[in-house]
Image (cartoon, rainbow, N blue to C red; front, side, top):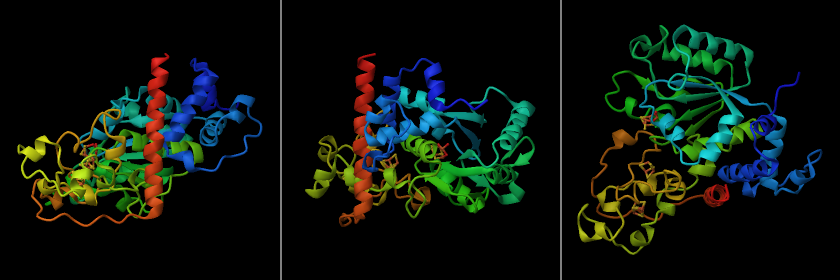
Length: 366
Ligand code: FSX
Ligand code: SF4
Ligand code: F3S
């Protein structure tokens, strides 16, 4: 018997066709898909054929594919990336994504433990060899033969390489998995490494940030579900849709930066008036992340909006670069971004704004 598709599962769980198509629009928005060319919707129900191009792309994928198996490995991290994702304030989105994937193994969320969990993982890797998505959270210790992190008596290095061997693709979520993060900060006692340093034969996407923005993770995941491949990445393997612009490019304090109005301390008149935090150490001009557009807590706020300079948490070595609150005497020049990056970044933010507005509307109408 053919495996149940994602769409069939959602229908079985009570989602109407109308809700399904609307949600596909939300997902397309999260992925920044509105610039994608429409596809021919042959063989689909009439309502689906009338759905706008990007939503139709997602709908076609969900209507034809079974759930994507996910293997989630936690190593040296604070679990903030899992926390951020599970506390994301887009429940409808989270709900759809959890229906579109099957998390076969996750150390911190799994109900199973010990031998049973390890046996489940082995069975899953065998059953879905070459098809599953591997998500890595945390850095991997390599010093002293890897003894600083062991699970079930095996080292993180060993477990990661075993899991990566059968994966179709890898998502390294958070700065720790992507670039080594805080565990790799000097003096790096555990010999921490990033996932890509140990996985050299599989595509790896970096959802950088400490922690990663949930919507950036979800958008990348949905891209994989839809297209069976990772989205376009920048030179540091971050999806361009979410990392194509700096925090500074979309910062709400940017007019003050341009006008040369800077807070000089956290309690001066400039700080109270919401002026630019550049002289208080803000790394926004050199940090590529979607915080200023997507924000956190379902679009509620982000560090700079709350009065704190950007620490550059989506960039390599952000902890060792330090100087978090070090005043900078003169502003850097306007950042240069590629036209492609700007278009993609703007597209993503617009898409998510539309998506969130749609979600709010759906909640309002029940
Ligand atoms: Fe690292 Fe994820 Fe920083 Fe934590 O677990 S990215 S320490 S907030 O969240 O890996
Ligand atoms: Fe915003 Fe920081 Fe840029 Fe100032 S320097 S505009 S606070 S990102
Ligand atoms: Fe990180 Fe800076 Fe955003 S510190 S959360 S990239 S504003």
